Image (cartoon, rainbow, N blue to C red; front, side):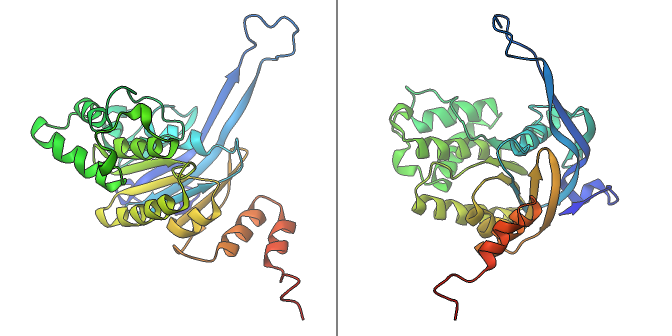
Length: 280
C-alpha cells in the first residue's frame, strides 16, 4: 500500500484515495425541547490518501468512529467525498458511479435486508436477478456462493431461522454474487464462532488468487495479522500509519504497531515486555 500523493498510473491500482475528506453535518432534532442537542459537524475522514494494488488485502484498523466504515461506503458509492476523489478500478466514484457499483461487492456489519420468510437460496436468487446475473447462470452462481461461505446445508432454510453468524455469512455470499473486482467487508467475523472465523480467513486468503481486491475493516488484531498483506490505521478520520504486512505474522507485532500508531506506546511496551513468568 502506498500513502501520499498519487504518482503511479491509476490502472495499476484497484482503489485510490486522493486527499479524501468527508464531513457529516448534525442538526438538532425537530422536538429538541431541552436544547441539549447542538448543530455541528463531524469530520469522518480528513485528507486521506492511499492506494491498493489489484489482488491485495487491505485491513483497516482503528477505534470506533475512526472512519473505517465511512471509507468503505465511499468506495461503494453509498457516500461521495466532500473533497478529493476515490478511484475504483480506474473509475471515479463520483463521475462514473454506475461502473464502480458493477465492480464492488459490499458485506456490511449490520446486514438486515434479506427477506426472512424466504430461504437463503431464494434470497440470493432474488438479489442475483437485481445484479443482472443471467437466468442460465443464476442457479449455479447462487450454489457456488453458498458453498464458499459454508451455507450449503442451510440453503433451503428460512432466513428467519438463521443465527446472527449465519446471517453475516449470507451477507458475504450476497456481496460475491456479481464476482466483484473489489470486495468490501465490514467486521465480517464479529458474530462468527472461532471455527467459522478460521474458515472465513482461509476463504479471504484465497481471493487474491482470482485478482479480487479485499478491503476489510475490523477491530480484531488476529484477523488483521492472519489475512492482511497491507494494514492501514485510522484515528479520528486521519490515516496515521500504514505498512505492508505478512499474513500470519506475530499477533504481538500487530498489536504493538497499532498502539504505537495511535499514540498509546505504553500499551505497545506492555505487550513487548516479558511476562513475570519469563523474567529471570
